[in-house]
Structures are given as structure tokens and as C-alpha cells.
Image 1: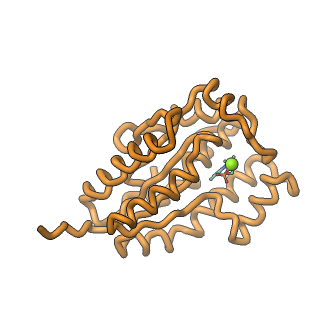
Image 2: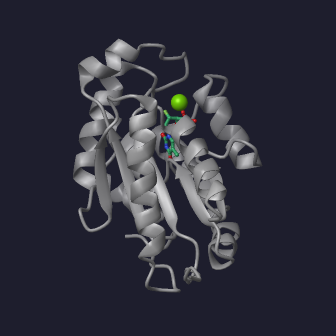
Length: 211
Ligand code: FDM
Ligand code: MG
């Protein structure tokens, strides 16, 4: 039996607080999809390899200071500069597994006190994901994992505020919340099922836009 070729790749975003295992899960999802003959690529934001990403890295590692608005806009710019390349890959049938996206941008900045709508505005027009997988963990599960680094924002109390902001952003029409407090393998299997479902259910060749 011949397998139906999807119209395009799926744009799948993983969101959640630090220490939820997002990055390793994203990379393993790409491996699993590719092993099943589904082209996939790992993308992460911030992308620290660009000039703009270098400024963001200096900020996160406390080597440079920017006010809240400026760093917010740098994170956004870092997504705009990736947009065309992402669109080309999706059109070529490559599924993108994205480690953080505009939702991190808005949730982290709003958790610092910036107005939520102000934070959302410059993200408008970026590619809208087909699926957002939000990894959730309770405060006690987070503290059990420990191992926060010394970058800015890697503080349990702040991460809790960020999780509350995700609640204001989530949209049940394309978000799925997943409890990340389980074994790596069990979480991987659950995430992979959702990714395969999203790829199988692409109906529009054209991408939608945020918001
Ligand atoms: N972060 C990430 C933001 O504040 N805004 C954004 O737009 C993005 C993409 O940067 F604390 C924060 C989230 C995190 C930090 O991210 C670095 P990684 O995933 O730990 O590299
Ligand atoms: Mg981090």
C-alpha cells in the first residue's frame, strides 16, 4: 500500500518551563520521525548562532544588559529572521520540531510585567504552528528535578509565573497540554503520537499566521 505524501511539513512547537526535558525530547522526536521516513528538523529559539542571537546570548549569560522591551524585541527579531527558511523547509515537506517559539517570547516577557498584548503585537504575522505541545510540571516536580543553571530566568519562582502566562496564551484548537512528570520513554511515546497525528492531518498547503 502506498503511503499518502503530506501536503507539507508540520510546524510543531514544544513549550514549557526549563528542566521539563524539552530540548532532549525535541531531538529524539526528530530522530524517531526520520527513522519512520518522515523528514524532520530540530529548530530552537533563541537561535544563538545569528548576530541577533549573539546579543540574546550575552543577555542571558549576564554579559550584557537590555531593558525589558529591548530584549523582548530582540527575541522576536530572532524569529522573524528565521521565518523564510522555516517556510521553505515546510513547503519541501520537512516537519519542524521547534524548541520554544513566540509563546515563550510572550510568556517570559509578560511574567516580568510587560503588557501581554504589547508583547504579542510584534509576533503577529509569524508562521502559526499546526500543534503546540505544552509540557507542564507542578512546582514540586520542578523542584525535585533541580539543576537550574545560572542563566537569567533560571529561578523556580519565575518559572512558575511563566507557566501561569502560558495559561493565558493557550488555545485549545491547536494546543495540547502534557504532564512531563513521567519517564523519558513514556513522555517520548506520548509526544510522538501527537506529532504523527499532526503530520497526518495537514489539510492546508498554506500556513496560517499568528495570532
Ligand atoms: N526566552 C526564550 C525568552 O525570554 N523569550 C523568547 O522569545 C525565547 C524563545 O530564554 F529562559 C527565554 C526562555 C529561557 C531562555 O532559552 C533561554 P533556552 O531554551 O533555555 O535556550
Ligand atoms: Mg534554558
